[in-house]
Structures are given as C-alpha cells and as structure tokens.
Image (cartoon, rainbow, N blue to C red; front, side, top):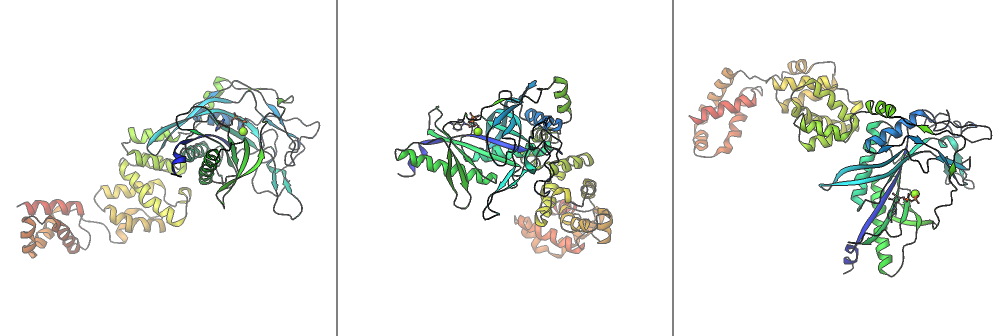
Length: 484
Ligand code: ADP
Ligand code: MG
C-alpha cells in the first residue's frame, strides 16, 4: 500500500552541467589556470575587475565550446554576445559574472544513449560560455571564510538540458556520456570529485500520464555521478511523501548530504530574475563563421559513437566490445593503433578487454601508464596466429614476462622460456597414436559415446609433448584417429 503511492508518480529532471575548460589561461584575461598554485597567486587586476581593466575573450575557450556544441549536434550561433550577471558574493570580486544570456553559443543539441537496453534522447536546451567564481572555504578557519580567487575567471561551459530525463538511471547515464564527451574532446577533465565538472539537478514530480511541468527543486553539491543519482532518488521520495500528505513542493535550492543520503533546504528561489543581466559593455560580440566551425570540426577527434560504429561495421566487432573499449578515450586510441598493426581484430579486442584490462585494474594503472606498446601486442597476436603458441600460454606465461621485459619480443621470450609449441603434424600424430594405444579401454568408452573423454586424451598428449603440442592440431588429429 505504501509502496504504491510512488508508482503513481514520475520524475521530471533537467540537468545543468558546468564543465571547467582546461585552457591555459582564464576566460577573459591571461592569468594562469594551473591547478594547485598557492591561493591568490593567479589573480591580476583583470581577474578582480578593477576599474580601467578590459576583458578579452579566450579563443581556446570559444573553440572548446564549439567542439562540445558540435559533439552534441547543436546549432552554433554566429554572433555571440556577452552579458553581466550581477550578484554580490565574496568569491565574485567583480560583483558580476561575465556570461552569455540571450545568445548562448549553442542551442538545440541532443544526446542519444542507451539506458537499460533502451535508446534515450535528451535534448540540449543551450550551451553557453561563462567564467567561474573563486573558491570559498568555510571549514578551515574557526572564525573566517577563506577566499581563493585563483579560480575566479576560469572558463566554463554550462550545458543545460530540456526537462527530458525521467529517472535517476537516465540522469546517471546522461552524465556519464557528457563526461565521456568532454574527455574525448580534451576540453575538460570531467572530474566531479574535484569539481572540474559540476551538476545541478532540477527535479520535479508529476502523476504518470500527465504532461505538465510542476514546481521544481534545484539540488546542488553532488561530487560524483553516483551522488547525483542518489540525490534524485532521495528527492523523489521526499516530494512524493510531501504531496501525498497534502503538502506542496516549493521552488528552492537544496543541498545533498552524501552521509545521510538526504537533500536539505538551503534557500528559496521564488524569484529567479534578480540578476539584472545587461550586455557586457567592454566586450565586442564574438563572430563565429562557417569556415571557423569547419576548421574546428576537422580538428576534432573521433567520438565514441563514430568509433563504435566503425568497430562494429568495419571491423566486425561485437557491440559490447565496441562499447566497453570506447568508455575510455585513451584505451580507445590505444586500440585504434593496435587495429592498424593486426588484421585479427577480434583477437585485438579480446586482448585489450581481457589480459590488458585485468592487468591495469589489478595494478591500479591507466592505459597511458602501460609499458607494452600496441606493436608488442600485435606481435603476440601474430605469434599465436602462426601456431607457435596459444592464447592460454601467451596470456599466462608470455604476456606477464613481456611486461617485465618490454624490450624483448614475444618470440624471444617464448624461446627463452621454452614455450614454443609444436604444430608439426607428423610429430603430434605419433604422440596421439601412442596415447590412444596406451589406453584402449578409454578409447572403447569414447567410441561408445562418452565424448567427455576427449579432454583426457588432449591432456595426455600435452603431457607427452611436455606442453608443447599445438592444442588445435592435437584436437584435429585426435578427432581423425578416433573416427576410425
Ligand atoms: P533557470 O534559469 O531558473 O535555472 P531554466 O528554465 O533555465 O531555469 O531551467 C533550468 C533547468 O531546469 C533546465 O535544465 C530545465 O530543463 C529544468 N527544468 C525546468 N522546469 C523544470 C521542471 N518543472 N522540472 C524539472 N526540471 C525543470
Ligand atoms: Mg539554473
């Protein structure tokens, strides 16, 4: 009965993502953006908006915004104006933020992805450029709030969806896709934990079947994609409970407490229009031509959806392999290099998703820290394909040794460890014949239908060959001899 009340409602969610752009300098001045510098050392009078200083627009930030706009299939605006969004806050020394108001650089994009086996499309309402505020720390000093203005003026893009998201799973997947895109484009490191990607979730509920938009709550302060999901789930329960008890949802900003898993009211936001936006008088509009857009597009790397389609359609790989490989840009690019060096594409994917990934996971490494170059793996695949070794020997014995001695070729290692297998049919045939004649009773049983004995025969031949008989050839010859 009490569970039932939740199934009457559905979630309506719109997400606002702020992605900190990894440019060398700030959005409207040349101050460094390098992370980790001592507080307030990357702060010129421009960052502080002192009288007489004039902002100018960071070209690299514009290029980054165009890239993400194109990656989300949006329309790029030609004439981009900037606006002042006024509010007073300790970490906003100018007293206003320079942002885009009426003319966001991108509109009408969308992102398609899969959630629980179904395709989902989320429309992108707008993407605009702006600058970050400084950072206030409230818990370091017992009496004072500490302000670090190094971050003031760092470029951001804000990506705002339409209220198209219907569940916490969809929100989770949307954010995963956005993070993947900014990482592929190398415009942002996509780290929610460190705050370089931040998400505000606008959440409302309505009765299933309704199309109206009800009053929403905006939840902030989630430092992981998982916590965004948790916050949405908590907010759903809270709003349904409230409405079912006859209450009303009020428009407000709430924070998420990861320890309790609950959202907490912070400030009500009945009137959102108190920013007194006006055109930034010190910046001329940035004009983006078609030629510029083409140029940016030409310099974009292949994105996950393109790569997945190539892996599946051109290289004949399973969708699953293609999807997992493209989860990580560096892994995908490593794999692209490997594909150029082997024609056994499925083996390449098996190696990358199998032994390589396991090794990286077990050792807490990224593919960029992996000692073996794609060529070494290609050589190993070729060694198996030539019949000189097999996958299990290669993955259990040769591969670990290659990691220890990356200068040696797989062939050299196989020779040194005496691991080269024999695929000489004449020699193996003799061993097969010997083994079969040494166990006539088993052979009879096999012929009478006990096919499981094949494993025993293979094992015996292996033993007789000291592990060197090519298992494929062994199997083939055993089958031939047992048929007679
Ligand atoms: P604001 O400028 O006040 O933040 P916007 O209209 O730009 O408001 O909307 C911000 C975000 O809230 C967008 O992602 C939008 O999709 C989402 N949103 C708007 N209305 C609702 C609603 N009723 N429920 C959930 N999300 C909503
Ligand atoms: Mg908002």
